[in-house]
Image (cartoon, rainbow, N blue to C red; front, side, top):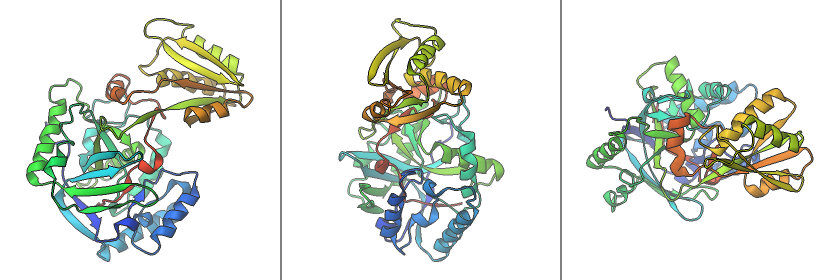
Length: 398
C-alpha cells in the first residue's frame, strides 16, 4: 500500500502567533460579536483572519470578499510573513476544555484516496452526509487561492495508541516550532517537527492499522467535511500536483480529550401525538426485540417512551430517515438540531412541538457505523465545544 499520509512543506508565521491563529470559519455562525472580538484582538497584525471567510458573513454575492482574501494571501507571501518548513510533519498538542490535551499530527493526504460519496470504500471517507449545495461556496473560496489554511481534522481508529501517543516520548526535549496561548480562551497549543526517523515510524504504524483489514477505512473525517469535499472538487477542476493534496490534522478517536455528544431533533408546527404515531408506524410498529431502539418523546410537559425496530445501526439514523420523509411529505413543518437535553426540553414546551431524545453514538462505534451505513446522517454527533475546534495556524502554498 502506498503511503496514505505524507509530510508537507508547511508555512508558519515568523512571529506573532497569538494574533495569527484564528478559529475555524464555521464556528460562532450566529455570533458576530465573537468575530468582532477576533478582529479587535488581531488589530493590524498579520492574522489568518484576513485569509479566511467566517461563515457568519456569507451572503448572496461573496466575490468581493473572496478577491480581498486572495490579495491578502499574495501580500503576505510577498512581504515574507512566513517561514517554510520543508517535508515536515508537525506533532500538535492542544489543551482543550477541562484541561485535557488533544494530540494530533499535521501532514498531507492524497485526495485520490478520499471520497464523500455514500458507500465508498476509499481510505478516507466522510462521516457525515455531504450536502451538495454547501460545496460550491467553498470551491469559490479555494479555487484561486494561493494558500491553503486547513481546519480539517481526520480521525484514526487506534485503540492500542500505537500511532500518535508514542510521539510524546519521541519529541521530548525538542524545541517546538510554536508554543503559545490561543486567543479568546482557545487553550494552549504547541507544535514540534518530527525527525525523519520518527516520521517513517509514524507512517509504518498508520499502515499497520488497516494492513489486515478487508475494509481499509483508515481516516474518517471528524471536522471540515465540506471543506475537504471542496478541496476534492477543486482538484477535479484543476488536476495539478499541488491541488491533489490537502493539509490536515490526524487525531486518534480514542484520545481521551475527544468527547462525542448526541445532537437531538425537534419538530415544530406538528401535532406531537401524530408525529409519534407516524414515526412508530413508519418503523413497523411497536417493537420490543433485543435490538430495539428507544426514544424519549418530549412535548407540552409530557414525556413518552417508544421502542422501534432499527432501520440503521444508530438511533439517530433510524429517526433521521423518518424525519427526512416526513418533512418532504409535510413541507410546512420545521426540524431543528439541538445540542443538550436541557435546551431540547425547553423548546419542547412550545405548542405543536415535539422533541426526541435518544442514546448517542459512542465514539468507539464510529468506524463500524461508517463501514456499515456509509456516511452517517447529518448532525449525528458533536465533537467537543466550539472553542476546542481547530484554529487556522499552519498554511501551504497552492
